[in-house]
Length: 380
Image: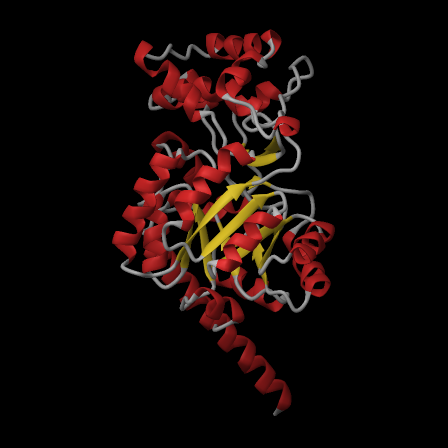
C-alpha cells in the first residue's frame, strides 16, 4: 500500500483522517495513518492546548491541520470582520426565523452564563485576521501538513509551509479547482466527491477522482467522499488516487466528539438520509437530514446568510438543541443534526478509531489479493 503520499507524510498507511476531535487525530496517527485536526472553530489558545496534547499522545508520529480559506465570505473586502460587527449584520428576519423554530419545537433557553460562549462557538476563523493567529500556533508545533478544506491556500501560506518543510494540501470539488491548486504550488490535492460530509460540490467521487488525477499529474491525489471501508479505498486507488481522505467514518468511533443523540441518528441512518444545506455555515454542506434542514427548506423560509454570518446566527440555537436533544422524541432531538456524508448508511456500529484503520487496511489487502488472483487466472 506504500505510495508517494506515505513517503511525503512519513506514515505507514495513506489514510488521512479529518476530525474536529483531537482524540481521533491522535488515535489514527498512532495506528499508522495520518490524523488531521479541523481547527476552523478553534481559538489560538484552544489550538495550543490541542496540538500539545496530540503531540504528547502520538510521541512524534506525524499529524496535520485543516482550515477553511474561502475566497468569498462576508467581510472579505476588509480582510474579515470582528464579533461585534457580525452581531450587527445579523438581519432581524433570520433571527426571528431561528427563534420561531426553537419556540415551536420547545427547545429550552440556555443558562445566562452560556450566552456569550454560544456566540464564540459560532465564530469561524476563515479570514486572514482569524486564521493567521492559528497558523502562528501551528507552525510553532510539529505539524507535517496544512490543508485548506475550502478555497485555495494563499501564496504566503504555501511559501511559509514549504520553508518549514510542511506539506500543503487542498480539497477540490471540480477539475478547475484542482488545476488552480496545482498552479499555486499545492503538494497534494484531495478530490472530494459530493458524497462527502461537510462542504462539497456536486460531482461524484467515481467521476471526479480520475478526472483530477489526469488533470494534475504528477501531483499526487487523495480520494474523498464515500470512503469508509477497505473496498472503497481499493476502488479509490484503482481510480488513480494515492491514498484516501476520510471524515464521516470517524464520527461513530469511540473517540468521536459527536453528540450522543446525533451519533445514535448516524448509527440508524441510511445513505439516503443526508442533504446538502446552507443552514449551518452559509455554504452548501452535506449533513444529516433532520427537522432543522427541513425547516430551512420551506418555501417561506428566509435565505441562509453568507459565511460566517450563518454560523454566528445559528450558534446559540445549535447549542440549545444539542444540550436538550437527549430526550427521545423531543423537539430538540428532532432538530439535532451534524455534517456527515452518504456513507453514513454503512456506519452501523461503534468502534475504536484504531480498529477502523486496521479494518480498512485488512480489507484493502484482501481486495488487492483478489485482484491479483483474477489477473493471474486470466494469464494462465
